[in-house]
Each structure stands twice: as C-alpha cells, then as structure tokens.
Amino acid sequence: MKFATIATLFMAASASANPFAPKSVSSTKVSYVNNLMRGATPTANSQLRRLDEEEYEVDISSYSIKFQQCQFVKAYDDEMADNEDAGSPLVTSRFVIFRLCPSSSCGSCNSGFGEYLIDLESYLEAAVGYQEELQEEMCNTCEEYCQNDNDNGRKLNRNLEVDCNSCVDECEKIENMEENGYLEATEYVDCQEIDTDDDSTVLYSGPICSSGGSKIKIGIFTDEFCSNVDSSKSVDDYLGQLSHALLKKTYDADSCISCEVVEEEEEDENEDENDNQDEEEQEPEVTEMCQQLYEGAAKCEKVYGFDDGYSNYAGYENQLSQETVVCDFIKSIKSGTYDESGEIKVRGGSTGSGQSATTGGQKFALTFFIFGTIGLAVYSAMLHNKLTKGSAAKLSNQGGNMA
Image: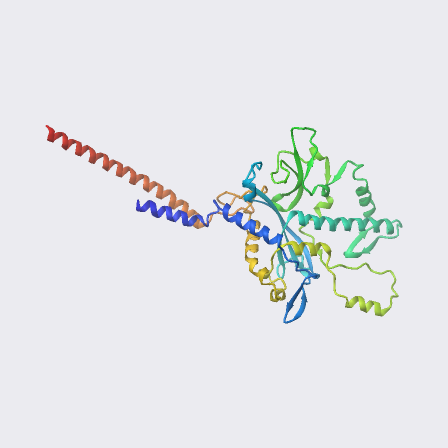
C-alpha cells in the first residue's frame, strides 16, 4: 500500500509538466493572452511616455513588419460550456505571430527585434487594407505613366517600383477577374454564410491557417463562428475559383513591409531649398498598418533586445510584467503544441517538423508507472496466495478438532 501511495504521488507531481494533459494550463494562458490583447494600450507614435518629466514617443518608423506564423488554438470557455446550443465547450482563437525587425537588417532579423501576437481578424484587416491600397496605387500609376512604350518604370511612394513591362497585364487581370471566372479571396476573410444550394446544410467560409501555419487560405466551416473546419470540403466547390494573389502578400515570410511612410517624390526638381530642409527636419511617419498591428498586439520585446530604451519609459511596467506570459505562449505555438485545427497535439516522440519529442522525465515517469503497475500486480498475487493458504490451513485445523 505504501508503494502504491508513493507511485500515485509521483505521477500526480509529474502530471504538471506532462504534455499529455495540458489543457487546463493552456486554456488559462490562452484566455489571459486574449485579455491582454483586448486591453492592449496604444504604444505607437501617437502614445507619449514620460521619463524624468520629458516626453518620449515609441517610434517604430525604422522597423518593418515580417510575418511569422498563423495558428488556431482551441481552449475551454465558460460561456461556451454554459451555452446549451453550443456543440462543444471549446472556443477557437485565431492568432498571427509577426515581428517588427530593424529595416536595415530585416532579411535576417536575428537581433533587436520584437515578436508579437495578434488575432487573425485584426491582422488581416490591417494587412489586406494595406495591400489593397498598394495595388490600387500601383494600377493608377501604371495607367497614368505606362501608356508610353518609352517609360520602363516609375518610382512610387512606399518604395514600390512599377514595372511598365508587366503592370499593364497584371492590372487588366485584376480588373477583369470576375469576367474570367475568379473571385478575390480577400472578400472572404470575414466569417460568413455561403450558399450551398441545400436548405438542410448550412456552411460558412473564413480564413484558415494551413501548411503548418505558413499560409493563410479560405476554408469551409460548419459553425457561424468559423471554429470547426470541415477539411473534407473544398472551398472551390462552393465559392468557385478564388484568386489568392493579394492574400498571399499578407503572409509572405520573405518580404519586409516598412513601417515608415515614404512620401512620393516631387517631379519639380527646382523646389525651394528651405522647403527641402523643412521636409528633412520632419519626423518620420508610421504607416497605418504598422500602427494598428503594434497597438493591438500582445508584445514580447525585451527578451529580443527590441530598442532597450522602451523598457525605461514610465508607465511601461505593466507591459514588462506581462511579457513573460506572452513570450512563453508565443514559444509554445511556434514549437508545434497545436495542430492546424487548434487541438493540442498528443504524440510521443518526434515524428516530424514542429512536433515535440518526449522528454527524459516523461519517459522515466512512464517507465516508473509501468514497472510500478507490474510490481503491484505481483504483490497482489502474492498476498492473495498467502491469504488463500492461510484460510485453508485454518479450516483444516478446525476440521481436525471437530473430529
């Protein structure tokens, strides 16, 4: 009995670090991170911080946005559990991880960066809006300046280069997309009911994380919250052919989107020198996309050396106290804790990229449990045998006395 008690206590102690039962911990952390983002305090260049009675601005104009990963995460929710109409007590959160990298070294982005977590809807709202604006601007410039065969290209603001050799065809395809039988995928980034031609079947379309979180696509869901993906159905069967060209630009991990607003170059080269000096003295502006994402995201900055001056701002203590939780949660997502549907992976050993191997402690606990179970079984058999023999001997003695 003492052995059994020790085994029980050991297994209970090791369960806290056991990934085979992490749902309660993960649910708490997911809920906490969600609350962090809902209550995120604006800290972009519009938000002033005070230090020694001086005013400071969090300036991210020298940084660039770099997409990292998209991930669904399912966790227990009290409201869903109390909802009789809900099919499951789990609620699906959709996250995007991105970085703010120094623009001068965004390609490698190995130091001095910040890592951030934001809900998928907010990310797509900002990123898609930015890409749509660039696309419209590109086509307008293409139409204005590329009609002459002698024009090979024109510098556009935001450092966008318009190639007259290709932009005409590209913009014509965009304009005639529907006539050619295509639909713009970005029109379905909001969860919405779709026409199934079957009154008994209600389906919804919305964004999903695919290819291990490296891509964002449009998928089919069975619920109005776009939580339960129906991977057996193809979105093309219900919506038709989708063009993902614009959507792809929102998750291109190889591209860096500068946060600095670059004004369009003036055509008049004989501007007044004083005007030029005034422009040079103006503080750089931050794009609306970067400002939206930075303000709305949970932040993991100090551990990566993201502009150490920020950590000294008065009123920044709350952000610093939360960073450990945020950094740990981002790390758990990137390590492959969840599958594409948001379920916690329950697998032993390393079977592929992004899956955690069983640790030495977990192997020891499992071995301990197995041998403990065998030991208890042997002990029980021995005890049963001893009791059986004792009872037989006692009955034999009783029978002798009666004779």
